[in-house]
Length: 593
Image (cartoon, rainbow, N blue to C red; front, side, top):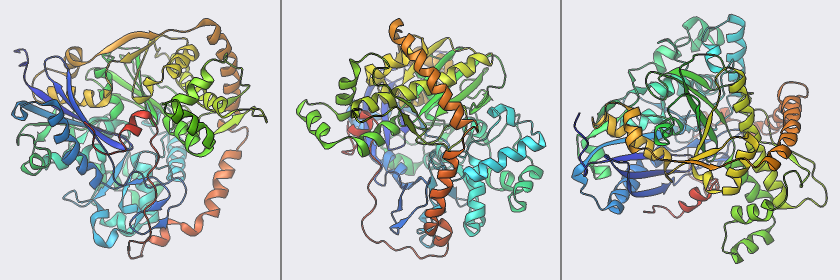
């Protein structure tokens, strides 16, 4: 194969929780020449349905699909302009998405929320990955799968998450039957956006395997699904199953309409969709066995390749070719990381801290970090559980909630902030130790995502994990990873591994463990583990009881009461969810190049 031309380019677009980012990348060496960001105009609807002003029940998280198209219309041309390239030299585009994010559509891909008669129906909207209201349905799926000995359950560490396709689909059926019947496709947003770019609906092998329970070419049987609910028996065949596209292959070519939106040449390659975490592995040159990549932002996803197929308790899944062809791709994760830091800053930190941070010319996150960083590990006398958005791994239980133990009348805001930073590191160590104990050892730890900018946080992770930490040498790891897949789809490289070797970039062993801090963190981690097992493994079910009480108290706002309502625009839309990282905060002003 001839070497890629120096002046050919690809576009990678990363659809995150709060914003969409586009980056222009040179095919020959992965140089990032221009970028732009658009924050979603409707942000995340987790308290109020904007179309009606009505209150949403607990644990909901919705989005508006038009926001994703707006990224194509605004951020992509802005990135090309920023790069100053000849757009006729762009040979491909690829996208990645947070997952599992689901869009109910008609046969032609029209989202149900875009039909006027359904604008006031919450179930017509996109269910974002952190929509956790399907936990009761997930519990039933897990219980029945264990009872029946379903062969696919061990591939997911023994538990299916409420975040995934089947739990969310069952919730839709049982809470708004009319919408369920009207829906013709239950589409991952990763595939929906590719559908908008090409006019073709192709399911990507990544989300189908990790989030759609597709193992060895089969979905859960009609007998299993019908045992959950007789009307759910044909869900896989009627609503989910579709053509599967392999990662790095072309789903189609850029349509005339999408070319008009993006300003890119019609007919260029459009890669099969993918997940933000999984595309990042080749961008960080981390596709060999033992190299765990943590993509750290609002949440953290941990991905790793192996030549071995085994069960890791509480993992999100293992899929043949789920990251790169020829290897088993493992996934685990934490459903709240940057989101937890943002929640604390936005709701718990006194106003005086914000004034001091502004006077120092710092973000509030950096100011709190600097205040807390000089104290020895353990000096605050605190330990926290990082479950403010539930637990994705290894407990797979989104009914769990956050805890801070050890607070006194002298505890300061920066000390609690540090305890929360440490708690997320302890959560990651729990995941790493579970992989190690299961025969899939983690030998390298590589970080990507906006949170790697916090050097104290990265040093804390190194100390807690007792591992060196390497960092991706890109501020836009997922977008770069998507660009790598675009280059493969366009034929510039034979496969994703080869493209990653040429276009990916990593800074090796940027942080190494400090032995004194590591010893102190060993002691704190032992306390974390006691709390983890006490609250998370059934010894004390208080978190579940509290969630149930909250749900009962909020029941007057149940979604079922919206089912026959007429949508009207009333009042002021709910405030967008606050940015979870400094990188997201930079995007709030809109497009930036």
